[in-house]
Amino acid sequence: MNNVRFSTALHILTLHYYMKDEMLTSEFVAGSMNVNAAIVRKETSNLRKFGLITSKEGKGGGTTLAKPAKDIRLSDVYNAVRQTSPLGKKNVPNPDCPVGKQINVELDVLYNKAEEAMVSRLAAVTLEAFCKPIK
Amino acid sequence: MNNVRFSTALHILTLHYYMKDEMLTSEFVAGSMNVNAAIVRKETSNLRKFGLITSKEGKGGGTTLAKPAKDIRLSDVYNAVRQTSPLGKKNVPNPDCPVGKQINVELDVLYNKAEEAMVSRLAAVTLEAFCKPIK
DNA sequence: ATTAACTGTAATAATTTTTATTACAGTACA
DNA sequence: TGTACTGTAATAAAAATTATTACAGTTAAT
Image 1 (cartoon, rainbow over the protein chains, first blue to last red):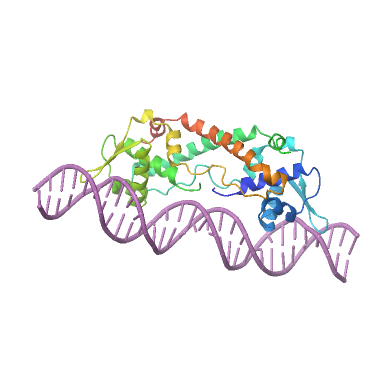
Image 2: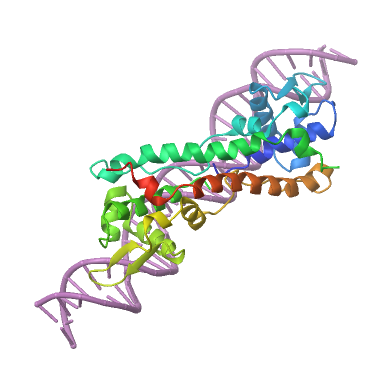
């Protein structure tokens, strides 16, 4: 998961916080971020599926926060964009080797513990708290 | 950092633990892992730089653990292979937007906190503890 | 001293992942 | 009925990751 999605999603949400309850277009958001508007739409669409954004189609449409920033935790954002483990991918080892045969089970357990620790830390931060220093 | 390096490094170390103090060749390790021997050598070479492996060149050479498995923490392994943040990359936002101008500073702070939480969790596990269940 | 079996490392090719671009159907407002 | 949006898919471009090949340098054994 070496991509820009968490950063992108959080930028989108932060911008919405900054702009109060204004409806924002993907074009506008893309401008703040220097990325393509289609990418913003793809991500807002995803965030909507996770209940963080509401969107309105058609003329005068756009997106807003689905709930108060104090009720959005950064772990929610993480879960919305999460693809693979933060510790990376696993090999497909040789099953004829005792270590190769068993290691991925242990790695799964470990990866889960490590990720959980990180996610707990993210859960301790609300969108509001994150946005506060940005004036 | 969506790669296989942490998994690879931990596999290498686990195999050494499993094989006691035997000197292992990159060919042997690669066989357990279904990867190329040159990749194993690249990683053992890196682990050596971080003091986790000792290696011996020439005929009869190979690698061994540099210290007892109980003295190796999985955070050491993480630090040896770490490249980018586990939360991914950041955008290069528009500096003419107030949010775009400030967000990366806040993201840096957040990314560091999140990563630290994960690394602390890894530090709580020794190589020995990780390897124990692998018979 | 020569050969064989290793590590270390670099160059480069192949593959996979990520991001950008383009296009257009569908929706809503004026 | 036109205009301004979102949603989404297809595809191209770029970047990151992994595999392969090659070979110099080292050590041990004969």
